[in-house]
Image 1 (cartoon, rainbow, N blue to C red):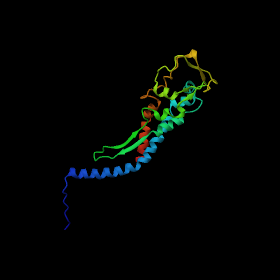
Image 2 (cartoon, helix red, strand yellow):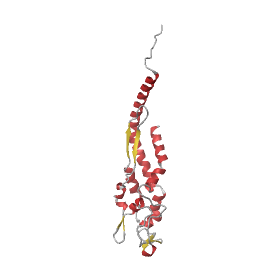
Image 3 (cartoon, rainbow, N blue to C red):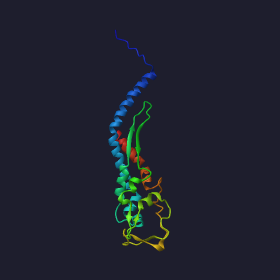
Image 4 (cartoon, rainbow, N blue to C red):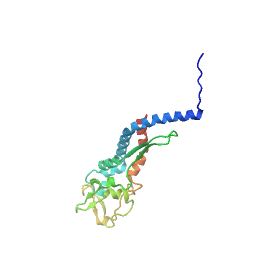
Length: 204
């Protein structure tokens, strides 16, 4: 005669135990994937900063001329932003609350404003904090007395020079930004789908 099994737990109690076991396995899995996920986020952030219209302009467009850049600063900036990425994991509860916590780019921008490439030295030896202008000054006037005269082959950037008669000078409105809305924040915001897809691929 077959044995009879008696279930003493109620359905809600069984569901609760199932969810406990399920979230325990998920937490083990997600914790194990954390280093790979962190590396993926950093790599994607690097690409987002390096490959966008503002970075293109800094490499060979109007911003290169406006700031008098005789070097390409975009790789250094992209590396600094990518290095700022912090990621940790809050264990999931049986109600599935928790998960990865991702922090990108401190709002004081100290990580990028202190790199050597954030400043260009004028022909008179004056340090010009072009990256601070680009990320924080918005459409504010930087110089009343000088502006850019565009002419190929002239100046440090080989695209133009600063002359008194062309003032005032400000960051091109197509690229200007403030501490909360600039080319870095915009690049990251536009890249959220790419960041999500990278995580999904790793966790699948």
